[in-house]
Each structure stands twice: as C-alpha cells, then as structure tokens.
Image (cartoon, rainbow, N blue to C red; front, side, top):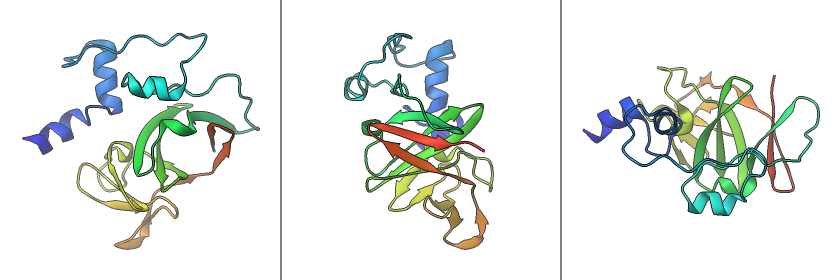
Length: 163
C-alpha cells in the first residue's frame, strides 16, 4: 500500500503534497504557515518548520540564470523538485556538489525530484529507473539520458541556467 500511495500522492514532503496542502485537496497535515512575500526566513529556520525554502532574495543572477535555492536548503544525499519559469527541474546534492536535470523520467514521466539519490544517481520513484546527475545518463543504458542544466554556486545561492 505504501508504494501505491507514493505513486499516486508523491512523497509527504514532495511538490504534489505541498500543492494539496496549499489548495486544500485532501491534506492530512496542517498547511504550513505562509511565508512573507517581502522577506524570506533563513533556510535553516524554514527547514526546522518543515517548509520548503524560498529562493534567496536580493540576488541578481547573470543573464539566463535563475536563483532557485539556498545552498543549505538541500542536504547532501537529497534531491528536490522545483519549478522555474514553468519548467520542472530536479536539483540534487551529491556529496556537496549540486546538479540539476529535468524532473521528468523518460521512461514513464515520473517526477525525479521526488525520487531518491544514491551516490551520483537519482532513482525515479515510479519504476526505479536511475540517472547519473553528473552526466544525465542511465547507468544501465547510457544511450538513455535526461537533460541537464548548468548550476552555479555563488555565496549561499544555487543558480541554474535555463535554456
């Protein structure tokens, strides 16, 4: 039952669960308190409250880049999904190195950002297909790849180059 629930509803801290809480579609937990649109709390405080941190404010990225996360918001060995400019992106912290790829598994469209990070590979939560976050390749068949995005770290911010 746990796998079926995960497939249908996503992870408890995933994007779909957050959307259900936000829009009242059958949430099992209380909605998180709203985050001020003017000043975001520091990433550690947001993490302690169980909130997904907002991107840092007051940072001007280079042309084509978008500021997406605080560096401390994504612990080593974790992956998360974000939406930037209408594009769903999976951001992974593989032993302190940040990588970004498309959030959609080519196999069946599963949300990679709701998957699991094992070393350098993100595993799709729907069917277990794995992709190396450094190369985008599937270790079992390198001809199958996910699109990757260029990531830059500046200070406490993670920036992604959008196409």
